[in-house]
Length: 228
Image (cartoon, rainbow, N blue to C red; front, side):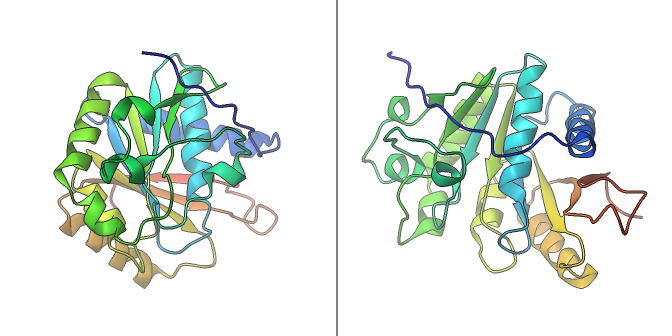
């Protein structure tokens, strides 16, 4: 099989606190055990920064020599192609699930160590139906066997059902919560929605914390486990 490769540009600037928080997130995921390999990462609302968390986490996992796949399951409104300045023409998840492309056509290696990616593909009119197909479950199962970790980026849970549909096929979920935006009530509601899918909640990432106002937190803080 001919290797398909894309060049991706990391838009993040060097930030010590940010990098350390992502490393902490990576370490805590490793502590969940070897059976946790496919992980949904979602948020309550759009623009909370989940895609950045997914990508930076993938880079950190790759740096340790672990093979990681980023699976962009946001086939409603993905931003990966533009955000990471991908110039090549790519096929993606929506084309695979609709039978337009084979699995060998949608998996791309990248210019980052041990990081591969499946892009979302063109926006589809029926995302939830596509993601609920057996072909998606089979895809996650297959990739779980090929990679050390599969990080699945989904649309926000707060307004859409896609994330809950995807979560059923994964070993665990991480919720990205933007500081000073998401109320405790909303976060708990989203947590319950994910739990109803049967997915284990691994923890939450408190994102976009203003460290000038909150000196004890870094830009990205990770809270592992369920609050008692």
